[in-house]
Length: 196
Image (cartoon, rainbow, N blue to C red):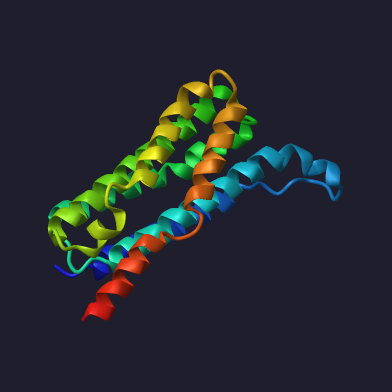
């Protein structure tokens, strides 16, 4: 079946998630710099989550660009990914409003881990559907980058109870690793078009 409806639905959900997150930023009363200081943790959590959602949107776009068709399993795996992404506004708001306290920071990490696992599952189902000569399969190979980031998420969850700042640094590191769209897929698609 064609992938266009999956792409359109995913883009719509992701756009709504970004909108929900920005609505969580409450306008302070007053016109001085002092009224902004208490909002700094919420704003920093928003920026981090905006970057994460942008990373997922960009890489999701690249992954689907390398996909010719989808099946029912891929549709459900995509919904699974969107479910975990849809919790990001909640976990972001909870973490920011509680100034990166241990439990909210750990739950934010659980959400990010579940997003990453759901993305990995979706990626694998697409590879299985596309077959051995899939450009996505050739691009991700063993996906060392993805596996390392999964390990960082797993480590960040218990570390939030030792020092939430360590977990926050790990979240920023993972975001930094994925900030540039995955060029592995672009290279594979360019190589395939040259061969044909």
